[in-house]
Length: 255
Image (tube, rainbow, N blue to C red; front, top):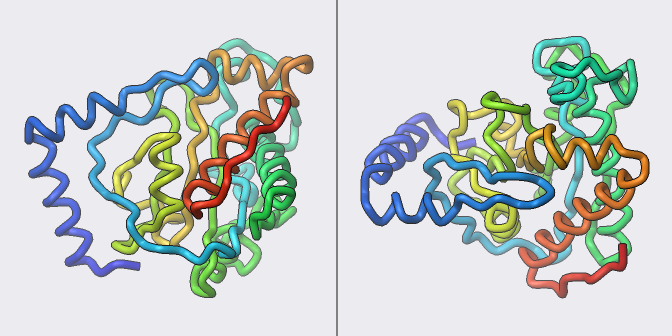
């Protein structure tokens, strides 16, 4: 993790650059709306992933909030559950975790098929109060990063004004790499110190926000006739973004 002085430097640079005309134009260029996942995050962000990474790097995928159900930070229930009174997909968990798990599993199956060194970690215990418990996502992701791996946590963002949109929340480090850059280019780029630095990024875990859990994205996930195709489409996008970050051939898969 980076030192306090470096964090303050990143913050000061971000504040100064926010007001330059060039940067304003850059931010406007990031205002993209996807027909499936909706809008990208639109916050001032200036990091670039330049570091080279081993083509066979071990990617560890985790489902966001897999160990925090029933606690603060359990993830969003989604628009139709909270505001329309729909039943959750699984009464034992928030809808976000339900979708996080399905996307993770599809991503790992697809990634392995197309040459990625990728695996999935699930604590299976849905409530772990101690953040430093060795079974948590945070603990496993941090150990994975210390061993040279690339930990990635999959999330869906909150609906409405509480959510920011799709994008990569990077690890709190000055050594971001080509996978980080590719995911940010394809999904959106959150600031380096988003919300002052979240727990996972401070442990070198990247967070990929796929999109807000609302609108067409949520409707297609909850509709049994479009669910599998939607999850697969998301997994293909993430897989291709990682492959591009590793300078490997991307894939075309018939849905």
